[in-house]
Length: 193
Image (tube, rainbow, N blue to C red):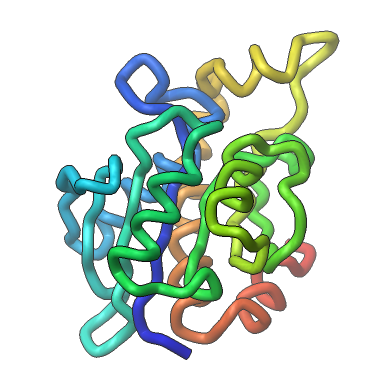
């Protein structure tokens, strides 16, 4: 297993989107960068990139936030994999998931996009669906609210209170995938809590 991983946080760029549910992948990536003491810088692959280590002597993490809208994330991801010489098997994508309740994190290896346009574009751009995902539950919209409007809205105050715990959980999941592998991480994080 290679000791360098590309970890991508999906979201939409700019301050207008920063607090949206759809940007929870980028929120988690920012927390991970803070945890490992990494600073984001502009990269020619049209992304903000930070580099650091899970721990001294541990796996190297290349953290990336595409500077594109969610549905155009594939180009920057493909370019970063090529630039760093990382195989898709060492790609971890952090993304929001409507089909999982808020405050729940689930790990997935390989598979389809499940209707998520960011994942759809990454799969198309890199030519494979064989990469790991950290699915961050945001739940379904209440009542008859449109799903698109829901993901492009901010977390409510009670969700914001719990969000630091969720983001810490995501960071732990990335650490475990990179150090022990996806199967061990799935056994821990996908088990009933």
